[in-house]
Image (tube, rainbow, N blue to C red):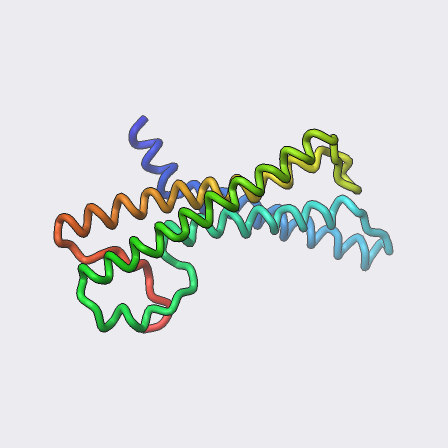
Length: 171
């Protein structure tokens, strides 16, 4: 069981991103072929692409938090020591926790209103709640990854190890 949880921890976002990306690309391809060859397109195809993209964005945000891959200005990090670097990363993570909790609260409120009034999508005619849930699910994943990052950084700080900085885009 521990091996399964470790694999899930390492790859959950990757698999979810793959599923939504394949769904987006396949649906878009089918819709383009239908539009060009059959002169017909469907509204459900556009909705699937739109909502797949929304899930991609929010799950990708959590993945970026895990890998410390968000865009950031890290010029100052080259000029500070390891302890200061760890404190700065922790400060950023704590600010992001606050922002994520606020966003999670308000995004859940939107889902709650849609569920209360039975809002449905225009083309698929299914509950809009399933698609509005992308935002709170994304922020819940972001919070989970932030907690993991904070625990990792505090452990590194206490052990005197260099803080995890993620992969560099340019060196």
